[in-house]
Amino acid sequence: MDEQNQTTQQPEQQGLPRLTPEQVAMLKQIAFDRAQAQTILEQQNQTVRIAAPPPSMQPPQPQPRHEIVYLRRNLTVAELLLVVLLACGLVTGVQALWGLGSRILPQVEIRVK
Image (cartoon, rainbow, N blue to C red; front, top):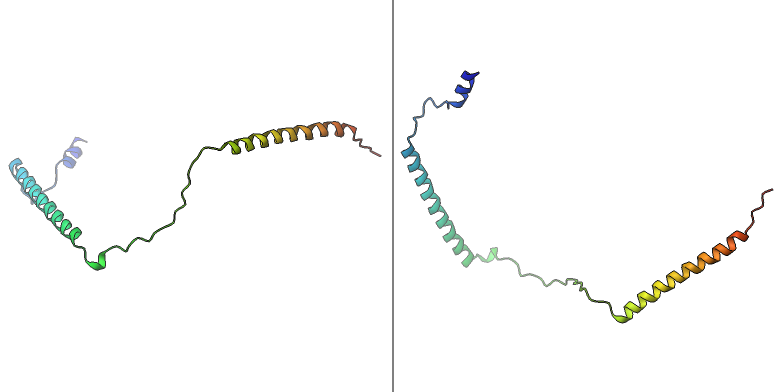
């Protein structure tokens, strides 16, 4: 079992020479410098492209759109009064129907032949 772990942990780089830590640090520095130079070039090219876009690449002029805007507002006194009157009328109507039903329904007789 230990032999299998040792063989899997060791890289199989037969033909490649081992790099020293100094060489690795130098390669990292070179990669960092190249990345910085590439970023600077991209930023310069981007500012040039933004400054003067070709006419065919210009976005079309936006069309004015009509949007529906909903505003939240407080209820007026008339609206509040209407709600209260409707609620009172609804309660009174339900009570009247209940009373009418409770008086008439017991008087109904069902005759079975």
